[in-house]
Amino acid sequence: MRAFGAALSLGVRSIASTLDYRAAYYDPIIDPAFPNDGQRRIYIFWHEYIQFFIHLRKHCHLAMLISKHSDADVLEIVAKQLGFEVARGSTNRGGLQALREMMRREKQDSFHLTITPDGPRGPRRVLAPGCVYLASKLQIPIVAMGVGYDRPYRLKSWDRFAVPRIGSRARCIPSGDILVPPDLDREGLEYFRKKIEIVLNELSDEAESWALSGDEYDGESSVLPGPMTSLEYFVRPKRAGLIE
Image 1 (cartoon, rainbow, N blue to C red):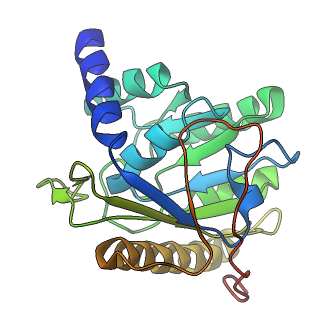
Image 2 (tube, rainbow, N blue to C red):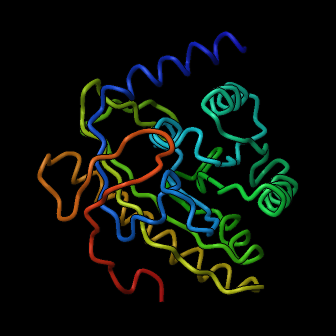
Image 3 (cartoon, rainbow, N blue to C red):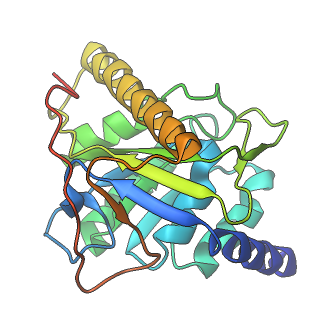
């Protein structure tokens, strides 16, 4: 298993290193590669694009929630080899325990948190409420990461997992900080779950269209993997009304 994980991480790095990465930020300070601004965040992105984030933001003080299913064992190995902390659990198996572990880690170690909110088994692009619950309890913002590749290969899996073509375009449009009120009740959790799902889908659709078109984008900037001591960004104007 370890040997397969090592081979897979090498394959991810080999393909990912050939891609043309660009991002259009609402607010560049949210990037975990940026020098720490003192704010912890929860980064969410659809399961089909997990490779994008694993490659670009390795060794950036991030803890990742990964399913307890056996098919995620290799992903845990790959994530750890690329510099991520890992908590195991899902909405079906050990989810509450994993969320509590991530809450404990955030308080003790000040990790950013990453969650694929439609994993581990779907439905595809339907946001589970765990990230909203966590943001409400911890009072740290959510950042929705819209990702797209140029005509990727798609696996016949529940999430239609995206495998980028060598040398193709990879694009990301992150939201700004999305603030969730404290101590939400069930009705409040569902309200923000729906709102954030809409935001993440809209950003994902926008990033996919951008990657496919190859057009220049207002405020775009190149993105490099790993942590950085300083960054120069062309900042997109903030878009009002993402969450009301």
